Length: 77
Image (tube, rainbow, N blue to C red; front, side, top):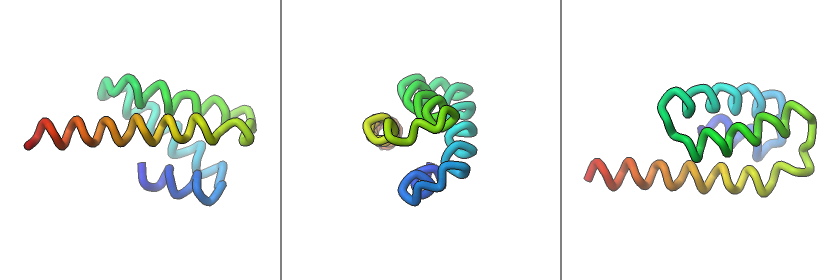
């Protein structure tokens, strides 16, 4: 996720697409549904070169990621 976020922050769209696509597969395989859907939206926007529409979806993706990390951390403790 860190590489993806760094690519998004740098507007390195090729790296962002590659890492988002990998994250989509990973989150789908692990059943992290909210994050899977959020990353899936990013993949679609990047594939279509719709960069001006990324910001709200990226924020939703970061929020879904933070919620997942919090749930895992809370579950471990």
